[in-house]
Image (cartoon, rainbow, N blue to C red):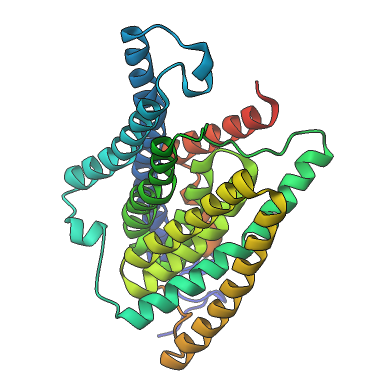
Amino acid sequence: MRYDSPYGPFGPYGDPRYYMAVQEEKKQIRRESNRLGWTAFSGIFLLAVIPLIGVLYFRMLQPYQPGIQEFGGVNPVMFYLINALGYVLGLSAPVMIYFALRRIPLSAGIPFEKAGVLKTLACVLLGSAGCLLANFPASIIVNLEQAFGFSGNIPDMPLNDNPAVLALYVLSVVVIPPIVEEMMFRGMILQGLRRFGNGFAVFASAALFGLYHGNLAQSVFAFLCGLVLGFVVIRTNSLLPSILIHALNNLAAVVLEFVERYRGTGAAVTVGNYRAGALLVLGLLSLIYLLIRDRNFFRTGASVSPLRFSQKIGALFSNPGVIMLTIYAAAASVYVLTGT
């Protein structure tokens, strides 16, 4: 068949079927990202509201105690119990509601396929080393903030020497966040976007994970860690490695904080250096093992999408849910930097 047009059978504008496929996939990404963005934002809202209501309720039951004002004026143990409950409900409830409304089985939204002990361990060690390296760009951001006159401090939780408070602090940092945050970001969000390409799903879930943290330094760190966490979930089809990496990263931060608190900065630096050296060596050995085991380990799979990656990112950030999440992140970052 002959076509007189130099552009082929469809003229200078290309195949209309391709154009329709592009527009349809953009629409689908916007629609799904909007749902996921609003769900994540509702989780952030509940994380703030539930503990606030709990603290206000218990303050009505007892006189305000100025000596524990950093704990909201309530008993420190009760403060941590309230916050732990808020964290669990704040993030898990929106995820469960999302799955229920979309009729998504938990096994699909929160996968835990068996990947084998050695592969899981290697992924955990490699991922932990990757998260360790993410500290360097985050530290650069902190130094830049300080150079421009800001404190550069990352918000942390109040603490005292009560053993019960210390135990609840560990629970609130090392156990609860890795489980519920992985459910939301590597479960609901990553799995919800995989049909648009694994690479895009990893990047998008990492980007939203960074926005969720609400301050610039932590957002950079969380985004880079999110890339690592999302990748190991894709390669194992299980949230177990990402939960373990997340928990080990948070545990290391808690251990260093406790060492500095009770043994001084010098001891914390020494422990941190030993930890970094050991983790980098173990991460390198894990990398070698995984490459020997599977030469295609770092391939996320070919995408049949008609969209370029940049078009997918544009669709990700051009819907009300993700826009609201971005506004929150920007406002929270300004608040952390300025205190206003």
